[in-house]
Length: 68
Image (cartoon, rainbow, N blue to C red; front, side):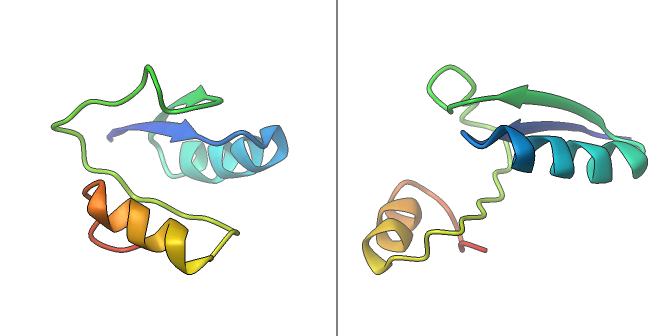
C-alpha cells in the first residue's frame, strides 16, 4: 500500500490515526510538527479540531484544497 506521514502535536491523536491507517495496510510515519516533513510534491490531507475561519484561509492559501 502507500506511505502516510502523520503530523500532529497531540500524541493521542497520532496514535489513534496511526492504528487505523496501519490496519488498512499503509506504512505510517509520525512527526510532532510539519517543519521538516514537508515534501512539495506530496498529497496533503489536513484535518483540524480548530475550525477557526482564519486557520482555514491560511491552510488554503498554503496549498490545501480543503480542510477536514
